Structure formats: structure tokens, C-alpha cells
Amino acid sequence: MMKNTHWTDYWVKGYVTSLPEDFKSNYDGELLDFWRNAFSKVPKNARVLDICTGNGAVALLAQEYSDEKNNHWKIDAIDLAEINPKEVLYKNHTKVETSLINFIGGCSIEDYSVNENDKYDFITSQYGVEYCDLPKAVFNISKILKDGRKIGIVSHSPESDMLKNMIRENKDYGLINRLGFFEIIKSFAKGNDSVKSFKLKIMRLTNALTTRNVNSPLINDIVTNLYIIGNMPTKQLFLNRKKLKEYSESLNNAQLRMRDMLQVSKKISDKSGFVDIFQRNSLKLIEDGVINYKNKHHAGDYYIFEKQE
Ligand SMILES: C[S@@+](CC[C@H](N)C(=O)[O-])C[C@H]1O[C@@H](n2cnc3c(N)ncnc32)[C@H](O)[C@@H]1O
Image (cartoon, rainbow, N blue to C red; front, side, top):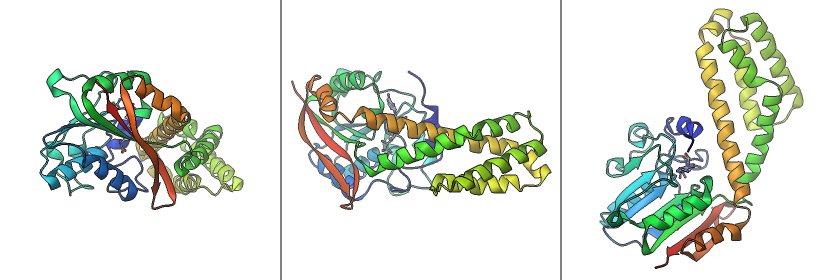
């Protein structure tokens, strides 16, 4: 299984959720209500697993709930990316004690295994399982879940506003790719281009982007940065080559994450196919529906499956 470096690069920055503009300190509103309602049916002393956890957003909600109700849950949280929430969350998330959660990075749900006695009472997945090799992941989830216990899922929705934004962003990335943004910066960072020629290319690129007048937050942000880069004194520009490379790599990783999300949304556009994979693995659909955030924003679809004996 390939390591998810574009996600590792994201989590190391200390974001709590994968949608920091909408959910900075953690999921709230109707998303939080969904999870708290699901948690209310999980017994005391349960073993809980959050899959595709990222920096542990849902694991943190579970820990908070368990602390509040004195439930003494034992919470594990895994992700394929190399994660270290205990280190990176200290600035953003002080409310919940991360030290009790067992975070496991570099671990795919398809390959994760536990002893018979350590099987789970509840598994959670927020914008998670749909990123995996679904048939293999669901097969394994069914193996590590106790009979009669449940998995709660909030998935991206093929009809969501987020998807519309992603389609838009994908076009923006397409544009900067076509105009050679990544190549221009890579070549300068490698020392293959003089400052003079680099500045000329940056100027042309800025012009090409502004004349297109695409009115997108992503392109506006890039244009602002290109303007600063293009007007930097020669010496300063030369000294900042490493930072430029990091900027370009971080944009490229954002592009890869966005493509991941886009592919995932397409993958789950066949909802009944999605549900079938679970039902074929002894996971019976108990509840499903739509999560409308603040009654206006389609934030995702939810599902609860129960493991049959
Ligand atoms: C959109 S993020 C969601 C993270 C978190 N649940 C949240 O809501 O903030 C998807 C996560 O799935 C992880 N992932 C992708 N494939 C995986 C796999 N096969 N096994 C475990 N984690 C995986 C990625 O590394 C990424 O951190």
C-alpha cells in the first residue's frame, strides 16, 4: 500500500479536520449531533476505532463524549498517512486530552488486524472508508467488529456543495498546470534557471492568470503570491529558493488531496453499490440519510451498519 504523503504533508500542519475552512476546531452542528447520537448507543468500557482518522477529529469527539459520560472507552485511531496528533494538535485543540487515544499512523484499514479479544464495539469513519480499497477495507472492518456491534459512517456526498467546489478547484489546478506553474518553480529551485529568466516567467504567468479573470479564491491567492515573488529583490529571491520549492510542493499536495476527494465522490455516486459492499460482508444497513449542515449545506451522507452473527 502506497504511503499517503500528500495527506501526511497536510496533517503535520496541525489541522484538526480535513475541511479547516468549515470546521476549524472540530466537526460541529449537525455533524456533531450525528456522532453524539451514535455514541449514545455505545456501551461503557467499549473499544472504539476511528478509521482514516487524520488528526483524529472523530476520535477526539468520541473521547470527549466518553469523558463526559464516564464511559471509559478505549479508543484507537488509524490512518495510512504518517500522523502524530499528540505533537501537532497542541496549539489548535486544547479542550480534549489526546493522550488517552492510541493513534496509529502508516497503517491501512485493509491491513489492520486485532486479536479476537480486542475486536471493536464501535467503528467510526468520517470522510474515510470511501478513500480506501472499498471491498478489501469493508471485508476487514467486518472481521474486526464484534457481532451485533456497529460502524457509523459519514461519507462525502456526490451531490454536496463541497463536490461543486472541488470540481471548480480542479479546473483551477488544471489551468496553473497548463501554464507551467510547477515546472517554472521546480526548475528555478533546482538551480536550472537564472533569477532574471525566472522573474520573466513569473511575470508572464501572473499576466496570463490575471487576464483570464477567473475570479477564484485559489487563483487569486496564487496571483498575490506570484506578484510578491516577481517583485522580490534578486538576492532575496535567490535565498528563498527552498521556501519557493516548499510552497510549490504544498500546492501540489493540495492538488493531489483534492483529486483524491474528487475520485472518491465519483466512486460513491452509486449509493446502492456502496451499501451492497457492506451487506455482502455481514454488515446490515440500519439507518442512512443526509446531513444538512446548518440546514443549508449538504455536508455528507450518513450510514449505520450492524455486524450480523
Ligand atoms: C479526507 S481525510 C479524513 C480525515 C478525518 N477522518 C477527518 O474527517 O478529518 C481521509 C483520510 O483517509 C486516509 N486514508 C486513505 N486511504 C486509507 C487507507 N487505506 N487506510 C487508512 N487510512 C486511509 C488519508 O490518509 C486521510 O488522512
